[in-house]
Image 1 (tube, helix red, strand yellow):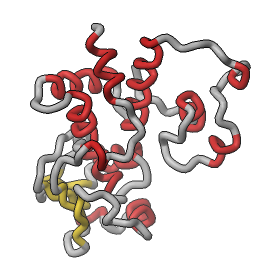
Image 2 (cartoon, helix red, strand yellow; image 1 turned 90 degrees about the vertical axis):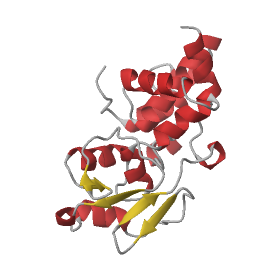
Image 3 (cartoon, one colour; image 1 turned 90 degrees about the horizontal axis):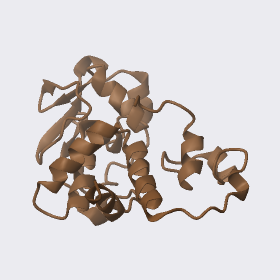
Length: 202
C-alpha cells in the first residue's frame, strides 16, 4: 500500500473529524464521502469500529501498514500499557516532532524536510522520518536550510510552549525532545484500546 496523497477532506469526512487540522471544506460537509454518504445508516460491526480506529491513527501520523504493525509489535513488547506506548512511539518519531515544533506546517511537509536532509539530530544529519527520538535529543535545522521560505513561514507565530515535552531554543533554531509525552498530553483523538483489541484478534 502506498502512502495516501489524495484529498485530505475526503479522509476527514470518512472519520467524521478534521484529523489533518482546520479544514473549511470539512466544516461545510461532514457526512461520509460517496454518493450515499449523507444517508448511510448501516450499523458498523465491532471489528469495523476497531479497524476504523487503526486507520485513523495511520492517516493521522502518515504511517504505512507495515510500519504501523512494527510499531505495535515494539509497543506490545515494551513495559507499560500497549496502547499508550504505541501513541508515545508515534509521537517520538522525528517527522512528528518536526511538525510539533512548528518547523513544518503538516506531518507530510515534515517528512519531506527530513527526507531531503534539512533536519539534524544532536548535530548529525538524519534523513529517516521514522527515526525514534530519545529524551534529551536536540532537533535542529541544517544551517544552509534555515533560510528556506517554507520553514520561516511555518515558524512565524508558532506557540513553542504548546507541547510540554518539547522545548524550543532560539539560539540553536531548534527544539529539545525533553521526554516521552504522557497519554493525557497527546492531543490526538485516538481510542488506542480499540487498536489493541484489533491486533489481539490476529
